[in-house]
Length: 368
Image 1 (cartoon, rainbow, N blue to C red):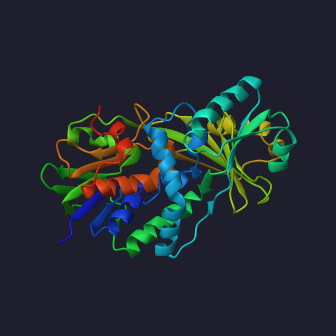
Image 2: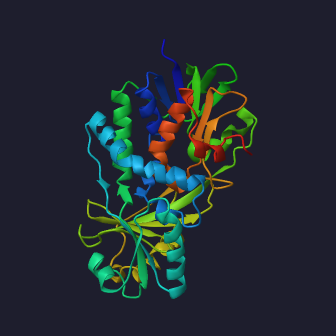
Image 3: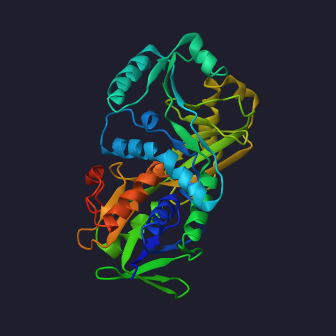
């Protein structure tokens, strides 16, 4: 008889995990308090950029991100095939732009260790840089080019994951408002606000920024906090910007629908997802130094999402010591879209009792 797995949370991590488990002979139910992908997942810029995001050292988090990037081409193709839906997956490459000689030296240091991990990192300067990205400000001193880095259109990716899950037999129940785990030590029982009871053999916690609400339930510290990320977008011709462009201030991502996504302004605002004038101004004040043509443009769209940040910067992925049938997969902060394939496979392997993926040693959910 198939085991019943209950997944708390229908964001990109919950849906990706459900999709992977649905291929491995599990009965899967996803319980979502609002709507699938309605929080951080659907609001993300969709970057798949571990080299640009992580410049310090090759720790376990970097390994998670890099391994997930290298899974993505096959993963996204499988999601599309099952869902019979297309979504943008663009292997655009990225340019990490800097403006000062001292920053060029920092890029060279980063290039040195990243090449040991197979990065095709190349420092670009002068006329070649303007040929690659003609609209880039002439104040840019140099840029590190990462041809592997890519991006997806997050709302469509999350929707395709949801459809693929449903077609694979996953039960997805939304608009539950409030969920309470009333039993988890031996078997799993979850109550919803409307009085329904959901029973299972395994529980996977993918509650994102709301995971900290479960501290009392499980009797462990779950230091996951909501960080509001505000983003804006401009209408631009499709070929005007060709790469993901990073700076120390943020990023700009060109989408196939003729928009340029600019993010992200971050602040601590509890669970508020409203957009503020100050938050968007943090973006519009610097993006003109990257692409001068933005001086003449006004964002046509602004939005915000809550990113689940952890106390130490590592996600919570793994079994509870006290109850190995309970697995956490939460706290991915800004990298939920990127980490969705590796997290889904790692969680499914844990439920299959396979040897744990080694970077998970730094991600134990009860480490606090």
